[in-house]
Image 1 (cartoon, rainbow, N blue to C red):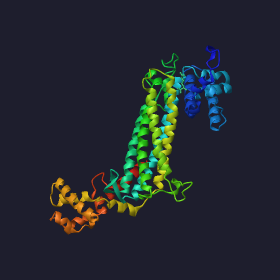
Image 2: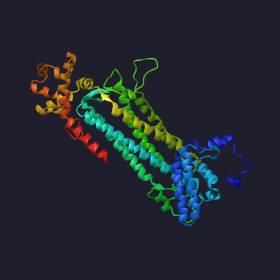
Image 3: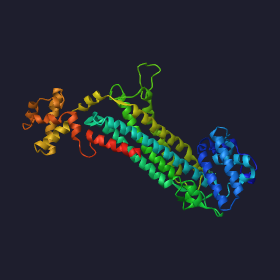
Image 4: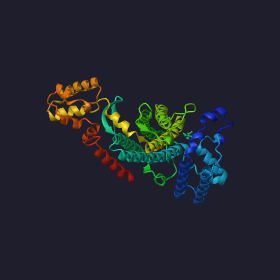
Length: 456
Ligand code: ARG
C-alpha cells in the first residue's frame, strides 16, 4: 500500500492494531462527498484534467452505490475508509484514480470527513431533541393542572403539576440544543487543503471545497486543521450533558412507575416482562437510557485522555476519536427517541398523584405564606408557628386541611377559617402564579408557547 518504501508485508498484529475500517466505514458518505468536492476543485484550478475529474466523480458515485447496496468489500488490509475507497476507485477507473490524492493527505481528509460526520450527527440529534420537546410539551399541555408532589430530597416538598415537571425537561432540552448548535457553528470550517500538516504547493482553491461541503470557510491554520479534535470533544460534552438530563428523567420514570410508588403508568410498548415472574412489567427502556449515559460520558473522558498532551500535528492516537464518538452519538440519538416514545405513551396516575401531593404536609409553605400575608408576621416567625401546627397535625395523623381550626388557634389565635382556602393542593399550585411557577395557567401558556415555537 505504501509503494516503494516497504519491502515486506506488515505483521498481522500491526494490521490488527492499525485498522480503523471497522468503525470509520461509517464515514463513507462524507469521505466520498469530500473526494468529489476535492476532484472538482482540482479540475477547476487546472491541477487535473476535467476528463479525469469526471472519471473520478463517476467512479466515486459507483462506490457510493456499491456501499449502500452492501456490495462493497471492505478490506482490513487497506486500513481505513480512505484507502478502501481509493483502492476501489483504482480498480474501477485505473490511473485517473491516482490523481485524486494530489494536494491532499489522509490527515486533512479524515479531519474533513469527521467534521462532516459529526455535523450530520448533530443535525440528527437536534431533530430528535425537537421531537422529544414536542412530545413533552404536548403531554404538559394535557396535564397542565394534574397535581403531583414536587420533590426535594426525594420527599414530597410542595405541590406542582405534572405538566410543570415535564416542561422542566423541555427547558433542559432547549439548552442542550443550544450547546449542539454552538458546537456545530464552531466546527463548520474546512480543514481540506491543510494536506499532511503544512498546506500544499499546488494552487488549490480551499474556499471552493469549503463552500461545496457546506463549510463557512477554510480553517486558517494548517497545523490546527489536522491536529485538533476539539469539535468532537465539544460535541461529546454537549452529548454528555444531554445524556445526563435524560438519565435523570429516566430515573424518575423507573421510580414513579414502580408499583410501590405508582405515580406513572408506562405503556406495554415500553416495558418488558420477566422470564420467570409473570406479573412483572419492567421499565427496561428507561433503565437503558439511564445506563447509556455512562457510555456517552465515557466517550468524552476517553477522548479527553487521548488528546491530552498530544504534540502537534497529526498523531495516530487521534484515530481513536471515532469508535467511542460514533457509538456515543448513536446511543444518544436512540436514547432521545426512546424517551420520546415513553413520554408519548406515559399516563400519570392522576388520583395517586393528587393524594401524594398532599402527603407530608406539602402545603405547609402555603400556611406560612398565609400567616405572613394575612397577619403581617415576619416569615421566620410564620415558619415557626407553622412548624408547631404541622407537629400537631402529625401527632393527630391528619393533613393540614383536615386539622380543626381550634387546634390551629390554640397556637395562633388570629388564624381564621379563611386559612383553609390555601391548604388544599389545588389552591397551592394555583397560587404559584409567579413567572416560571407551577400554576396551571402558567403551565398551559408555556406549553402552548413551546408547541408554537417547535412548529417552525
Ligand atoms: N485512519 C486514520 C485516522 O482515522 C486516517 C489518517 C491517517 N493518517 C496518517 N498519517 N497515518 O486518523
